[in-house]
Length: 429
Image (cartoon, rainbow, N blue to C red; front, side, top):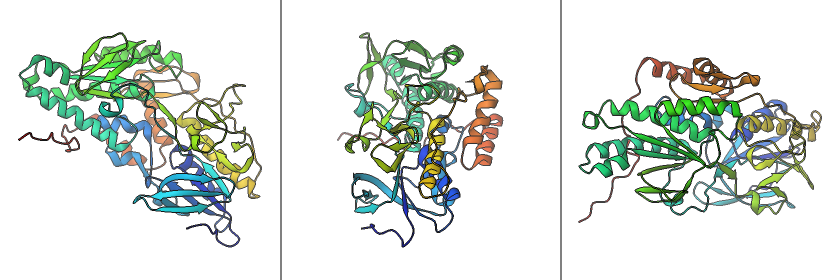
C-alpha cells in the first residue's frame, strides 16, 4: 500500500509518460519548488518514447535508444512507479497499479493528471491481431526491420516465383502520418538491401499503401498530400486510396474490393484510440476520449486533469470542436496541465488551454519531406531541413546523438543486418 502522502506535502500523480505525461512532469518539477509537493509518475516503461522518429529506427537511420528519453535522468524529483493502472476509485482518490511483475499496489493522490495516451486501434478485421505487425514501440520498429530483412532472405532462397513475389510484397494499412512515413522509409530500406543480394537482381520489392480516405495524410493539411504521394509513387510505392483490408492471413491480404494480394507482411498503421482505462472510469467521453473543460479539468472532479490523446479538450481556435490527437497538442497540453495543477496548489492562475496549429512535418526518408511551418508549404530538401530541425528542437534529450546518427547516415550507408528478433520457425520432425 502507498496511501499516505508525506506530511504537509500534497501528492501529484501523473499517469503516463508519453508526450503529455513527460512534459507535464518536467513542468511540474520546474513550477513546484522542492518540498512543495510529492510528484509520482506511473508508466510501463522507464523512458519517454519520441514516436515520430520510429520510422528512422526501422530504416536503420537511428539507433533505437536515440528515441528513448530516460525518465530517471531527466526527472530527478519524480518518483517513478513502473507498472500499469488496473483501476481507480475517484471518490477515494486512489489508483490501483500492477507493477512489472504483476504485484498490485494502491497509490493515493491529491492531484491527478491522466495522460496515459493511446493504444493501437484494431478494427474488427479477421486476422489483424494474429498476423499484422504493429508500429507503436521501439520493439515493434526493430521487429519490423528484422522481419523485412528476413523476407528478403527467404525470397532469395525461393524456387517458386509466386512465393518470392509474396515475400517481396509489403502492405501498409493506413496512410496517415505514421503509415506514410513507414512506407517511405521501408521502400528505401528494401532498395538498399536488394543491392547486396545479387540472387534477387532483376526483382523489386513491392510496397502497397492503403487507406479508405481519398488522399494520403488525410488528417493533415491537404496541401501536403499531393507532394507526399508523388514522392511515394516515385519510389514505386503502390498507393491505393479508397481501399483497405478485410482479412489478413500469414501469406495474403484481402482488399475491400475483393482482390487477394499475396503478401507475408502487413503493417497496421490505422491509428490509435484512447487507453482502455478511460472507458472503465464511468466518466463522460467524446468518441472514447475523456471529456474535460477548457482548463483541462474533469467536470465534477476539480482535482483531476487530463491531457493528450485521451482528453477531448475544447479547441478554442475552432469553436465546437476538440483538439486533434497530435504530439503537438499533447506536449503543450501536458505543460498546461502542470501549470494548472501548480495553480490549484496556490502557485499561479488556472488558465484555459488555447493553441494555434503551427503546422506539421512529415519525413519521407532520403532528402525528401513535406512541411508547412506556420502555413508555409515546403517540399524536398528545404522541408527536410525544417523537419529535422523541428525534431531536434522537440526531442527532450540526446539531440547531439541523433544529429550524429543523421550525419553518419548521410555519409555512409546503414548496415543491413538482422538482430534475430524474428523467431526461427519450428522444425517439423
